[in-house]
Amino acid sequence: MAEDEELLLAVLNSAPVIDGRPTDTLSAEGATEWIRALGGHGTSEECERLRCVRDALHRLIRRTSSDVGSLAFALDRARLRPGVTPTGVSWQLEAAPDEELAVRVVLAWSRVTTELPQRLRACANEECNLFLIDHSRPGTARWCSMAACGNRMKARTHARKRRSEK
Image (cartoon, rainbow, N blue to C red):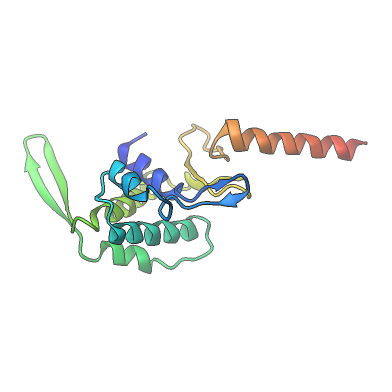
């Protein structure tokens, strides 16, 4: 998985449901260190930008809203500057330090949705709040984790079938 995909999933999955309760890594103690581990600075402004981008992406991916205003705002003052090397053109992101991580997340989302259409999706377990990027050949992955949600959902389906047979 590419580095930008890992960043995208880390931010998207920063609001998991744990033991039936929604949590938010970006609001929890330790958010500063978590953001720094992602390559950010850990300021409160950066945290708020990430939260706005994450929440907007959640709504877009789940198709509960088509509003891209928060994403446009995140990109408002950023720019990509081209550079030429003997091996080709490279692009350098220019953004304010507190804005760069949120911009990188939006750019990662754009790349994934362009290069892997319909492969970024919410976990099929409605009790889960996580996302996945489906790299399987047939494109049929449904759960954030086969060990957790996949196993749980298959067990529920099996139990429901057994009850209906009786």
